[in-house]
Length: 407
Image (cartoon, rainbow, N blue to C red):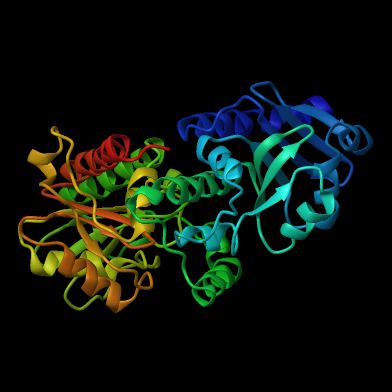
């Protein structure tokens, strides 16, 4: 029975390790516990194969994990890892605060720093949060401890803690990261738990039969391009989970945009949502991304812009957390991005205020925007152009930080 259980999850564990490596999270000192049922568990250490254990043996090998599972019936995965910036935050004795708005949603109001062998403190920190930091645990050392509902989602939790840690550490040379208010963070957490965390599971992909019209070949090709580049965003570690969105101008009336709440790895061309960017009416059963407003505003105001990508990438998020534009000093980036990005202050995602703010930040000469406490957006003449500029923005942010910030 144990061998059967292990084989069923081997591919998922392999994919988890691949994603963590892509996120620059080392596999050394990686520990992952998966509860199959109350009496059977899988336990992975480093880059090994998962081991099947009964409850008694699992408790002996991973007593902290076992104790957490006792109090968390709705969480079946626990992970500890040692990414770079989390290590720096622990060394500085920092809690990871909501300086980016995805942390309060996926993790909670903060990832608290706990003394690693103080089990009561750790359990208390995980009552309402899905991650904490461990300082000096006897087995896991200085580490992120993340809990989640599946192997597919746990890497996003760890990555968002690491991204927020990077923002807090590196933004110190930019004047410091700005913390979101308790009210905003609390509302985000409630909204995520009540609604957004369940959306991907509840939504079904569409097919040609779900449309009253026959989709032309050119439109279908553009839909496929959005699918392909959405997957590339995840592969290139430019966004996490279902965060971010892509769109492309279809013609003078319509745009195509990714749907709200669906994971990139299961999107099909028929899942792309056609939206009239003048009336904001959309076609089909799926809802367009909540950020459709600023995509539409850009297409209305800039005829030469034909695609837009919004991401939550690591290096640009340092500038988002610091609430400032990115000065572009990387020589190879300047001809394509100009001397600086645009910037817009924080507004609620999906709001008219954010749409107006992004539309103001994007001009005829500046086609990128750092979005305060949120992420970044890049426009292009095509979806291919927008993606290449998105990569270049992330590289330019890293270049600036390496030149100006000593940690």
